[in-house]
Length: 272
Image (cartoon, rainbow, N blue to C red; front, top):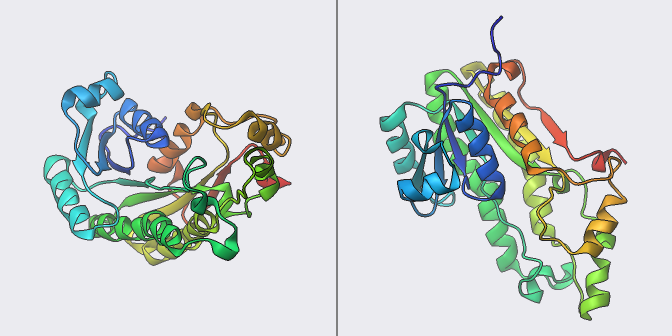
């Protein structure tokens, strides 16, 4: 029988492929035979790549590109195409959020939330996905095939529950509000996904969104984790390894009749 999940020889671009999620996506794709081009703001040596992706360095390369800079995306995509051919897969993974331990302004109440943080997050998370899709998706459409995978968040479907963060004000003595910008950027990906899915459907380019819930990282306060898990029907955070296979599914022919969809992996958080 045909292995519909086979991605061997396919060329994938993963933006932000050196971060926590991006590393997992890269390992999943490269480990199953794909050639993975990571777009990052600085290149890496082969030794650095081998250290982060043991045994996979022949299938992984890092290209210098900024998702907010269209010219750099064009140059990097040209180089990937010259090296490996027109990409089959784009994983729009690069993204930022306000830092829990950052300046108080980054987590300020909505009434006084600074526009500069809004601009930075929207430009990276939303405009960056548009530019990457425009540059790389156009090449795919010209080739008559391709899969664009948007990386979303449960906060793109529901508003952040501010009660999860209430302990911060009690502990630190200053307001802490999960900011609007991240949620707005991720919710924007819902309709960007649908737009591109319908726009390029007859050109053979599929576009789908994966909505992820909380993943175990060890970087969150115990108070947050305890409150969060009370709101997750499965009662646990995701293991990072659970997120890779869905990306392979969307990169493969197993999802060949799927476009414009939102696949939710959140332990049931948004089901309540």
